[in-house]
Image 1: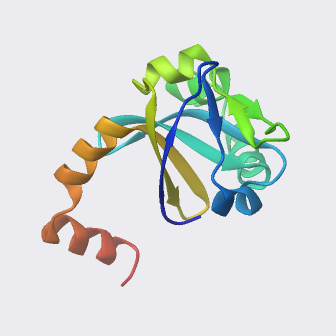
Image 2: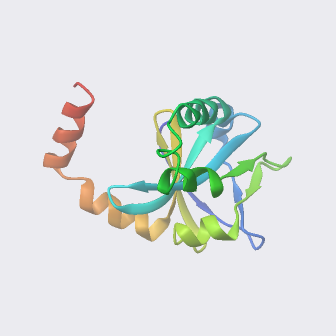
Length: 142
């Protein structure tokens, strides 16, 4: 998944899924708490990526499955868009990410992130520097 997509929540806290992401996300996907460079956001997983995450979690020892790792699953929502490609996000997820009404959805390779639009602007301003970009490119082998 790639790109940036501005969006808004409707009056029922539903999010309209952008057309360019519908095929990538599939009929069902999962949304849970996330973080990127110290900023709270929501992370969106396809069913396939979610299953990999579950398999990795279940392979951990019991002590490793405690605490923050389990919060990812406790707070997850399984989403199946309606006929108008809207999904309802839980009040907790919206509160966690500080999402009011204006949203930015961004692709992140095999996942996507859902951000409060103002928080995303701050994140992008903080991280879109030549030094941080170079460091990121080096980290992925470019």
